[in-house]
Image (cartoon, rainbow, N blue to C red):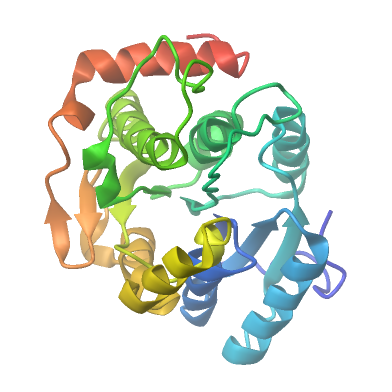
Length: 288
């Protein structure tokens, strides 16, 4: 399961961070900075060639040899389970889990599980992966989860009767709905874990010029690139939540690049958080 470029097990005494969607954009920038800080970093990527290229680039940029490449398609719940089982078998700690991987689809796509892809990758994958890795996170003192959301969540509503857009699909609505779901999950999980468990916080990196908009028309992609900050700038808030000493013990919060912020009123609805939790558990085969 380990990348063959890493000799032997991860040395003891080094924190271990897992970053999803680490082959490009925010994920790669986050993995790079965590590696620069001295962490052992697992890059979870969908495409092996792109993941290996990212690993080599991060290694060259940071001099950190404690990098591991793992491959899993987060659109597949079976792939998530296989990855998590292997991870639990191979690793003895998990200090940081960054849920970064996301998609933005202009037209409706379904995963191999028959679930609308934006919901599956952006929300259900973090939900399922967290549950599978929670024993290791809970056994690691001071462990942190970081969920990458967006200020765009404030434009979303949540129709629990049609989460997958079967009645009517709009790519932007599906995306912002998934970012709202990220926050609802963050707050519900923080409440369940309590003050003594791993911390879980959400990050809003702002408009970042990444490949997530590659499905948009060229004129919209150009506008996005001109407006967006660099992945390195966007990653700063994620890395802060993952590593800043002053945020030890801080949980259930929402942060922008300029500090803690208040998310939308809807995202802070405890009842809606619990309703989505139950629906998500059913869709991932977990007990509510």
